[in-house]
Image 1 (cartoon, rainbow, N blue to C red):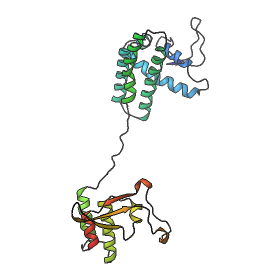
Image 2 (image 1 turned 60 degrees about the horizontal axis):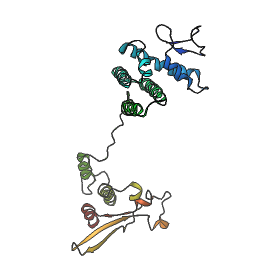
Image 3 (image 1 turned 30 degrees about the vertical axis):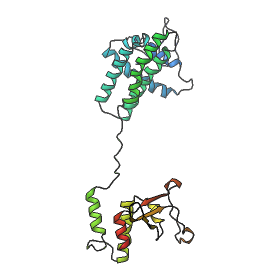
Image 4 (image 1 turned 90 degrees about the vertical axis):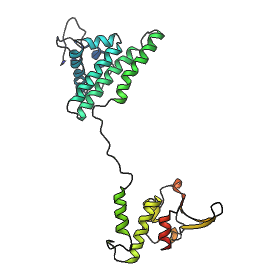
Length: 269
């Protein structure tokens, strides 16, 4: 718990400190506080200490009173990792809220910072190498374990076949369910639908296509006439009467696309 310590056998401490059930300050929390910025707001410090206290309280129950401080002092990575994993599972088993995730990250960062500072001391190269490899276990917790990781909503990247089939039936210029009355409008909308569906054009690219965009030529290798369209800046842009003129996304968007059979049938209709 947080308390102000006044004792003749302990050094003077300004502000509240984290103490155990006997009123003795938690050693490594006291050390950790020495490295905090001097201008840290009291409310922020109190919040961080409360979050770390939850870890110590849990570790006392799992490892025994004061054992977490002992494990940190001895750089006992196995015990430290076990304490963190048990604490993580406890948090994960309860109601998961943003505060739960914040509590977990605060406890984890506290342990990592203490261990990293201890490994900077006078250690033999062999001991340092062993500790470095074992500390990866704790780093992996930070990289892969999240109490309240939010799932991103899945983005639909293609239309279901049932939707495509329904659009084909509805937008067919000769369909009785076509919502457009004018035959010219029906063919225009159907052409737009085919261009978007089969050529994969963006909206701005579609609106910037000239009427004569589809070209053709005889392919000697395949011995047949081939059709294509080029997505680029509209060469007739100066004559475009629209107030907001459409454009392609950027220079890499300029590309040449083979015309699909469905679009070719529309062109010849």
